[in-house]
Image (cartoon, rainbow, N blue to C red; front, side, top):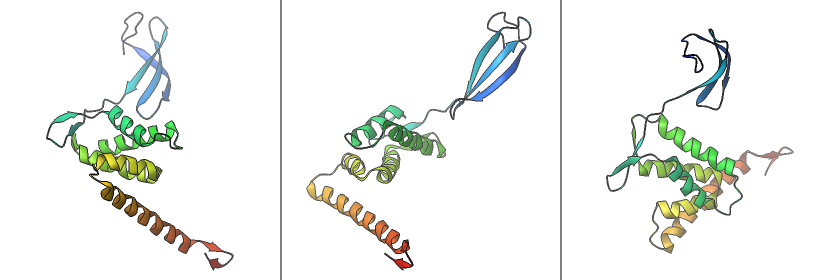
Length: 168
């Protein structure tokens, strides 16, 4: 590492800190002029390309995912931190896949799965756009499937809850 003040090529790291998942902050001192400076190491991420329905390819845009999720979560009791965490989880799952290409269908499925865990109304809103519901019947079927899934989970929870020795 070269000193930004005198250009000398030998420096010493005097402090190292993680700053988030993807960067390391290092405080350094130049061994010639004794001035201190900060450097950051970041992971260089490979571009991911999204294969659209019509076969076109475009760079993955975290912002596009965020916009879609924000629209689905509009006027819902969901904090921006929860939404940002969801977007981060979606991107992380995409990046864990092999290769540098992912279909828009896969991204949509990941988002729907994660929204279903977060908020059912937001899930239905996103699904209605993603699945391109053609009529009220397809919308109603999706709501009914979600309701049945939620009821099954509630039944399992009720079976496992014990109150004063009796099952509820």
